[in-house]
Image (cartoon, rainbow, N blue to C red; front, top):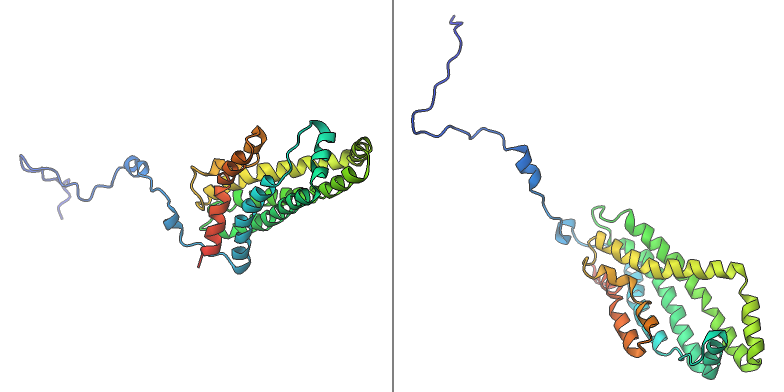
Length: 248
């Protein structure tokens, strides 16, 4: 037996070494990252209730817009001015209150239904948290609108000073908790849900930040123009609703 050291044959001059079996550099493999697209996650497969809830995501922005457009204009500052604006046209005030109330009801259903847009685990943590926050806020906000019915009646049956006193006395500290948690959960929750939908690849990232603006723009006193511009800011919810309803 030959126990002499094995010898290697050097490549002939001018011949490139054989690297066909050499492993690819690890750094090069790590530098190539595959971008995950919506197509990679597969189709959206919501159940029947989630598809029905998708109608809530479509209806809510339309109801909010109708409620804001028919909301009586406040011509005087403070609580007295607000009560007087509601009492001046009871039919219009209550029509607006109904539209806003059912807008929040529809949004509560739509928020929970948005879970039907989760695919391959994308957004499985963020989206449920955002949906619960928004659903809670929407329930709170829908209940707060009951005060409009009382203020319309108070403004038409009591002297304005007594109507203001009644409203002040009714708003003790637990009402403030109800009000502020509703505003935080409802208004902030729309933005959070929009970001969560983008995380789940249900909507595009470039429209997701719009979810924070629908109730901010009307506060600048732009009138009907501001309300209509605000409707465009509901784009993340509208897109998500359409995807739920149209899914097969």
